[in-house]
Image 1 (cartoon, rainbow, N blue to C red):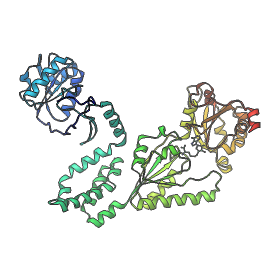
Image 2: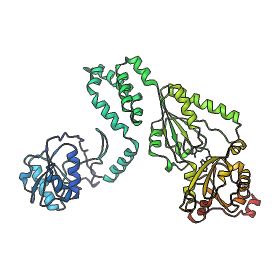
Image 3: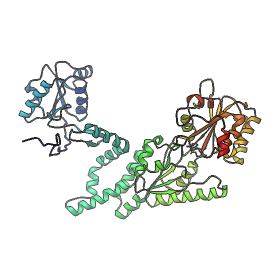
Image 4: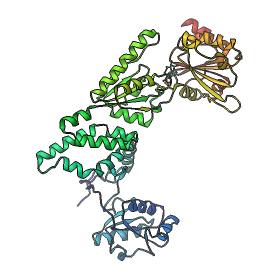
Length: 498
Ligand code: SAH
């Protein structure tokens, strides 16, 4: 048959297959690193592996000594295929690979020739493994790089709880079958619905929290209940309190990304970057619950109460709620208060830490927060209003060789400066004020503490900004690497024009 003009495109697709190799013989020809990787996967599948090669690499030789594999020493002979169900040719000799493929074909033995799509009768897909759960990806051999790329994406998307879930369901397979006996099409639909209810429940979130016993109990409850009770049990949603980091979506954690992919509802602060919200599941409902700077305390309180009520309401409606907060939810994020409200309401929750403004801004401004011989400790403080400033231990804050990371301080810079100086911090202590850290519009203003308020004002510094005070702040002038270099001197001409 003439080959199609389009080149390599095959008019057919490979047939996917998961093979039970337990106790079955597989021949691997080749004794090097490639063969070793193939042997490893085959052993995991429980195969009886025979390796044919003149010599074995040290790991294979050790396995042979331990009788985990059998070794046929020498060059390939067709008799090696006698007991094999499958064969893998992993030699670096093209002629030998050809001979193996031909001999296997004649004996109806499925053969894979590593990196040779034409000679291979079966291919080994790229895989994502989570316990007994396997996701296999194949491009038919035509675009292995694409298959690999997709594998990487799936790796990021599915966490280990899928493996634990697959294990739990496998363990209880008989009970699940008995619960929804499926003799005909009608019952099968019933089983499918029951199963969907089972999976909608809290099982996976419990497994993710490594609460295996609680997951077993939840399973028993879901399985034992009748349809109405089941629905009730499955209806309790959960809340994940997730740190979104300082703004750059690349600074999200893998877990945060996964939860955003699974969320039904996202309650986010105003500070959370739109680029991060874009990564969330398309049809997730997004609710902005942010507080604006300048809101009175009374108002703050009302807003916080409303957030608690919304979280509880959505979770009780059976939704997977992500409460997304800028930075880390436990650093000046009122995360603890929200969890207390959830606990009181009996709503299950989990917490995903985020990169907090102090570490993110310092990193993006080239400021090591601690540095040998320069700063041995770090303090995170908030300077939101006069009362929070009054509550601080100024004598302690004014100590040399300690780094201060001040959150929410832009409106209070002159007070901060005056009090630190009054309590003895040196006038030439460097500061760095990092506005919109890690974002495209990041700006860094540096200078000596004695000029903090003046310089910030000259540059029109605005929230969100993080202030670093301490000897380490001087590093910003030398180690800056992101965005524009620090603005150390006010530019009167520009400011006057603005
Ligand atoms: N939970 C957050 C802090 C919330 S308080 C965290 O862990 O980062 C809000 C303050 O955080 C802002 O006033 C500012 O001081 C700081 N902040 C948050 N994101 C910032 C950013 N991208 N750049 C500079 N400061 C930021």
